[in-house]
Length: 506
Image 1 (cartoon, helix red, strand yellow):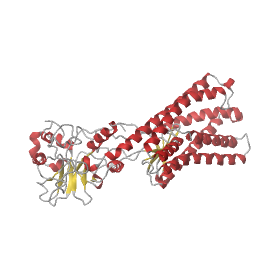
Image 2 (cartoon, one colour):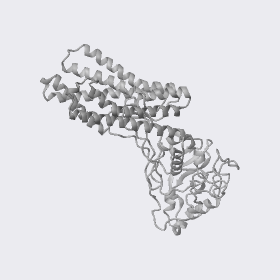
Image 3 (cartoon, one colour):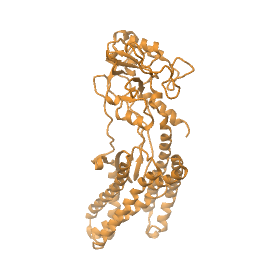
Image 4 (spheres, one colour):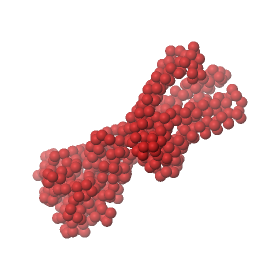
């Protein structure tokens, strides 16, 4: 099942983070000049934001406050740490089988309390028990897998009791082997998506085996509808090939034996997985294929997503109503007279779970498509705050005075040659009472710059989010391609822009 979905809400990376301005340093004393663009003109679209004091050019990230907020702070508080809510608007797919393209989430704030500690790297995605790294992609078994494995063992064990009653209680051991072998087949299905994605240069975050299948989380979208179609098709294709291999192996064993029953079950289950995933609705692989076809015809990936998602929702309703009816009609091979009350409940529960997975996945696909449509609006150059360079031993009160005079809302600590060393954290400034600011040096409130905290002013969209996610922090130094300081980018500003973009209709 191919799922394009998301969960989670964008949350602020700082506690009441301010909006500040952007810029680049002019020639002169780095301790007294303001970091501003090299040009005196500030284009309203591609250049840095205009002076926040000018009402004709409001700050895109400003909520009505001004740089005067730098002057005010609570009289109590920790000067070296602020409250930080750790969160990222990262889509979390529901269960299913198939590939799952996800955009890079917004940056996760760092928790470091002083500039002496190194910036934490982003944690590797978890999701259960790590089983291995085929092709360099981590494979996890989610806790829900153990539940479905127990369910398969119980159900298949009951079938074995009718076919091979001489096994006794050993039938459950055989059933457990079947459950493991079946999910190994699902893993092969997912690896097909993964290999195709890597072949197309698309990064795969992880593979997770979970309730009702598996998910390959592909972090970027295919560039063409042809690649999208191939990426979706290879999964069901491998399941059909596996079914054929199990059939050939079945011909070589004695019918009515344990190997024969196991091979027959694996053959049928893989063909069912292939057929189910080929249904033309998101989040299934067939829905991805339908999306690719509509995308090719209309030239718009969003149109393909909308069409395939609504087909997926119709498919969910069909499964919810049709699956129990098919079972009771005997169309699936069972004798209608042998179906009891417990079977009816189990069929209804299975249909409800499958319908919920498909419906949720279709909705998530629509949200993900909407997110991707707005991602290009996130541009580092437009979101960057103007910064004032100050030396390490500059008193905080003096640094804030320079920032307010220059209309800047960020502080960059530089050395005697004007080279940036660290960034003064917003939460740390707010935590210093105003009467203590003349005796607090900005160096004690700053966080050392790492390579990951230097962001190009040209970054936008998914590329920007991926860079920020790789090095979680509250502020980043934005530089031109020449290495000149452009300003400071706040994770909170990115998240606010993300929320505003998602709130607008497609």
